[in-house]
Amino acid sequence: MPFGSEGLEDGTGLALSGGGFRATLFHIGALWRLNELGWLARLTRISSVSGGSITAGMLALKWDALKTANWGQDTFLKEVVEPLNSFCRRNVDVPSIVKGLLVPWRSVSDYVSAQYSDGLYGKATLQQLPDSPCFVFNSTNLATGVDFRFSKPYAGDYRIGLIKNPEFTLAQAVTASSAFPPVLSPAVFKPDPKSFERVDGADLYDDVSYRERLTLTDGGVYDNMGLETVWKRLKTLLVSDGGAPFDYGGTQGKDWPRQTLRVVNVFSHQSWSLRTSLLVRMYQGGERAGAYWGIGTPIARYNLAGALEVPRDVTQRLAKIRTRLNAFSEEEQCTLINWGYAICDAAVRRCSGAPKTRLPQWPYPDYALDKGVSAEVKVKRTSDFIQPEPQPKQTESLPSART
Image (cartoon, rainbow, N blue to C red; front, side, top):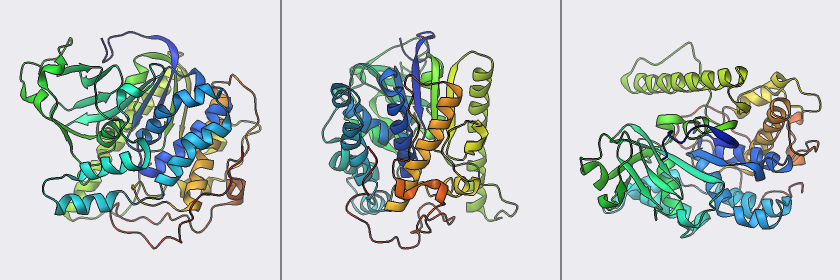
């Protein structure tokens, strides 16, 4: 049965963290490079959270097309990159919040789910995803306090049991995974309680209320890197972390709202630190193979000959881009994809090798990071749901990508 009892096995797992559209775009760059290096076709399981689930959902939906095209880069661009680029030009968060507050019979998460259906996944269900690799979309069950997982073979958590072969839509799974609290949360579902099967350790199964109504929030509340569903299962772990680095600051607000937000950030950072430290110890002790790369990791740390050049100040700027689900400009999209590509390349070739050998080239040469970052890339620190400075006029499509 799932939930960590299957045992360790050979295979490669990929974890895609949360972090809004910033993470979505960062992970696109990572997948781009993994495909070039031959790693994408070898994945056994892909675990995702929040913004990472937006990317993973599109990859899952187009997996068979990629496989049929023998992982050709043109197909990857057309089927995966371009739809995600287009979607990341949308304003999803604030319009969904406003409509959810004004329309009493529909929730904020209903409107977010409608955006995902309209812009990316259509009416696709989890049963339309490939059998292999297994895609796992992680959310957090507010009732049980643990990870609630959506996948093709099952949905559920270890405290209430599982639903085999669930009929949730892909949009619903991604909505629950990216239901950032409190404004985009919760995502509420009312499945048939009889559809759940008891599993070992399901101590709350006998209380039917837990199975009648699922109240789910962002998977990052429990595990923002999506590690738990891969590191207990597979011997090789590739981890792409587009989450927000901790924002250190000598001066902190004394009012209750800012104190509360700061305490939540400290809790989140502590959880991230513990999981990352354990992951590094696994790598260093030989318990797991693989590579980790983060949006705030200086590329020079990998000390890899032939790595793309990215100045430290550029890395610091990109790590401070907002994590909202609102429109990202051409400059923001291209630079984040380039950065995910570059840091993934350095980490994987330095720490794990690659099935294929191909020197890296910027996906969007006009936005090569060794030249610095455009002033149009906004990094001003603002509260997540305060409208930032006006963006430049959006283009209908991004500049031609290298193929």
